[in-house]
Image 1: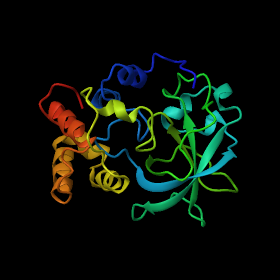
Image 2: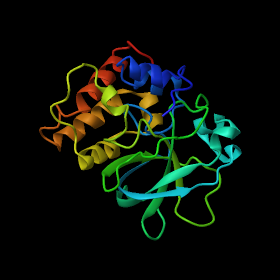
Image 3: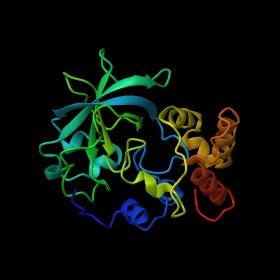
Image 4: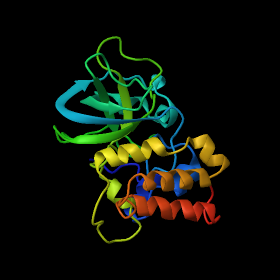
Length: 242
């Protein structure tokens, strides 16, 4: 994995041990879904539980077809783009992220869209057979004519729990005694309010997380819940912008 584009805010925060949370997500407002500590749901985002397959598929990519932060990727970064194939186990009601066989392709990019000089250059990403959680949004203006739907993600941040930067969500150096399970994290994502609701009232996220905790006893100390609560309280107290 090449560490070019080290000026990326997300990368600097992660390497410093600071959660990639409200400082980047809320203040900047342009990070792709799933780029940091989840405080809200970006518009159109869908939480998905999926199993990684060993298959990687070539994904023809024109940088002009990319949306959101990905539109800043230089054309040469999209040469020889590949994505890993995943099989959906569960997706939120009313969302469609897979083909008739339940498959989708996730294309991982190095952190910092627009700063990355190359795409993902590691031979691996998510170990085949692992069950993981994605937060997916539409990232391409054109879907492939054949094959499963394609989504672009920041491969160091997604999916949960294998993303390399996810451990940096914690605000202390101590290793968490317990992480939320895949299904617990999926449920938490589904409980979060939309970005629009969060921007109107960050307290809506705090209410949602507390409501989810009432139905998930024992999860209040499970990573990343303590960090989410801490960050939301900081936002509400006015110490960081939202």
